[in-house]
View (cartoon, rainbow, N blue to C red):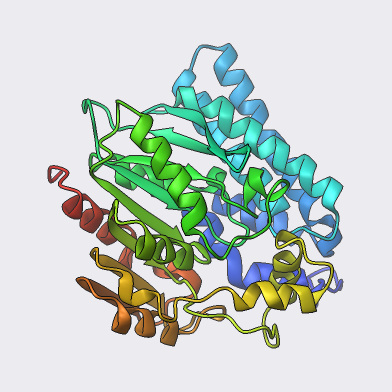
Length: 363
């Protein structure tokens, strides 16, 4: 595509601009930031640096606000900085050192934001296979022992991206525990993608049971994109889960990556710690709810978009047809992946539904 200056944009940058704008903006990146950063970035190789430079502006604003004693503003600035750093490293597996640097900054900024937010958050370390999974725990104000929603990330999303979703649950009296599982965020360095996601979720719910400030008898699970597979997968195995929300998740993967976006394929290969696509295909084959979905007996709310280029609507329909418990299936006409372009068709609705399932008071 020709730019105004007669330049040509990298096809990967073109794809990012055409498909990612709604996600970036609804999750907290200012629209002007998205427009300006992407307009000035022609090569994918420059993507991470461009977003990191914009993130540094928000980080500096946070530093100044904190210095001036405006803690709430500082928390908001740091959260925006974390988002921009995160989206700089997002799918940027072509330069791992640059990606890691942006990722470190994303985590650092969100960690600085957590105690300053309303309600505040807490960084937690969850024991897992001799190491730790890290999460951000936030609790609604005025509740001694709230229900908790365990939040599962996607292929390359991370807990630093979850602020908008968290707020919707928190306002409805639900605690949130967004965590990086195997192959995700902070855990992507120690652990490969784990299609058998009931394993890390078990560790997370075990951790919830150790907390005296959470109601471990009322735990829900929520997953976005690849997490839309992880969440129902875990719900099929762990009966401590009382309700499940699955957003645009696959039902079953094949060993073939034909027709899938190149950046997503390479991210899957790297996150699964595969040397090549043949090895990655073997991991992909383990991604399946076949013969498993029938074991989901808790209520489940499934969301899919008819214009999702990553996950066909049929995946949502197949999952809905096979679960054994109560099911809400929301197919959003014109919705893209995770229906971020029409977010108002599901974000508040799924939060209301989860609050109802976990017995939180209506608000």
